[in-house]
Length: 302
Image (cartoon, one colour):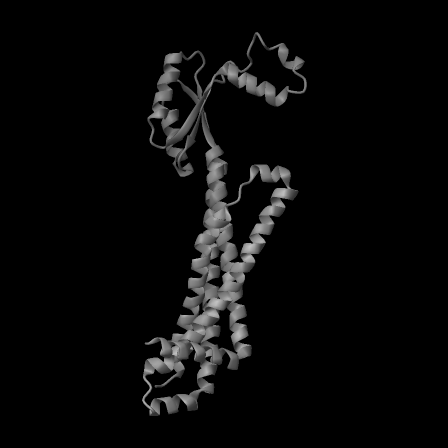
């Protein structure tokens, strides 16, 4: 297909859209709603995954030692942790450091209350390793290994937090797949009906084109382009809206909720939209293409 023919097909596709303004607008609106919901779901999932990684970095497994353990045994346990491929990083906290941290947390406003314990550390058995894993899903196997080491009294870990994060991710995934399938089906159905109306309006013109020797591809192309244009326009609108809303929402949280903002991080605009924009436009164009082809196969006899 040369440039002149391609230009003609694009022009005819636009003419078809103008002829069926009401149905075209309905299709654009429906696709916009589909892509908007898909975009919102995608943005939420990206942020949940991002926050999950942030939380994982702060979910440590704490290994406590038996009473009276020697430093050599503590070092040996440290070497086991260091050489474990599941470990991202680890920190050692002595009993004295644990007590100093406790005093800062609970006696900062009244240090005199803690002064009576200076010669008798109440946390004498609180020396520990705090271990951060590369993947929170490996926590159970790592905890079992630590519990089996000589000199280990107790292993404290965040089982509930891990299960909550995994459950949230799975539920969001299932809901997203179901909604996307439903919305894509609705979008394809509407575009198929829009193209069908265009075919019925141009039936006489199509017959004349066939009589003068037009190819099937030449006859079908404007309708396919019509569907793809509707899909692209319908997907571009919500992508712009999501970008604006996301920027303002993040700015609002950061400015109005200071305490929350200090503990929550959001995925960057680039991280989200470098994937969402091509995905959204591709889905929109794909909906238009599939809807057009289905309608042409059913209603256009050439």
